[in-house]
Length: 115
Image 1: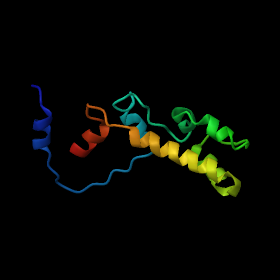
Image 2: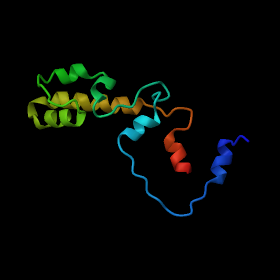
Image 3: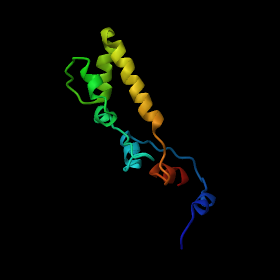
Image 4: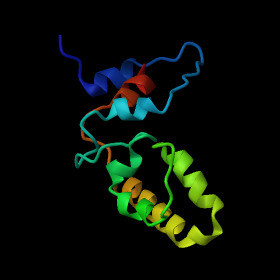
């Protein structure tokens, strides 16, 4: 017997409140094919490549021990001579996420909320 999305919504009942804690990989797993337009959700270790901002990071002239964007951004943020580069990174990150759109199909987040 097939159940429609409307049927699933009508069947939802909350008996007890619960808390769900998700890690950073949960969003990545929720969108294995990317957003509505195929844009992939980045992880901290591939954000620079996923967003295509390698050239901006290279403009710092710094060598980073980590590939983690959080670590790299922290180093850039601490250097007052890199304000323009930091601001451009921020613009590109905001732009990337602002342009993302949810896919037409339910994600694991949708199923989690309805569970």
